[in-house]
Length: 226
Figure 1: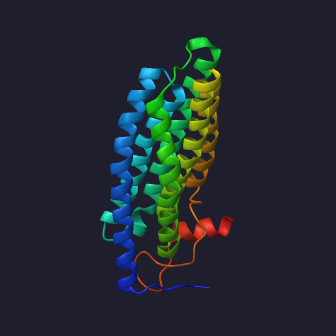
Figure 2: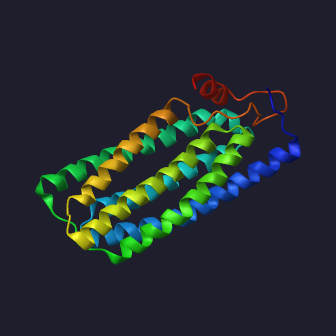
């Protein structure tokens, strides 16, 4: 079944995505600065990886912002998805290397109260932001917007894993919990990166990013594969 959007509705959804992208970028810039600083202070690979994920979240959101800044967002969809995918792979590579180094004895993480509070806040905020991004992307028919929502959702999973690692390290002295949590992030990042690379950001109705009656190639591809 083909769902067509009116010009006014497409304009509303496009503005909403731009606003969500701006909020995502602003929040993650602040989050990245705090997380990386706290991670370096505590020698926490998971916390540094969490901060780098925030940086990558910014690059992912920036790719979507670039896409929707153009007159025809559908033409930029494929490139935006590839940028998002590469960001996932870059994060997975860095975190895997650093986590393995930590597990092999490169150093144990110290306690980080600041990190625990920061990550706990993200556990609360990120699911809500991801849900709005995903529902908007589905209605508009934008695979990149939905892929970016998955990046945000990954931040939620990461937050939970990192929070567990930080708490276990702080309360029980389980130093290995920190790099183990980082490896969980790496696995999730690779999975989501592959989906974004293959254009499987969503399986939404056949709405149009350009004009009524047209179809978005990336959207059609992802729906046909599921």
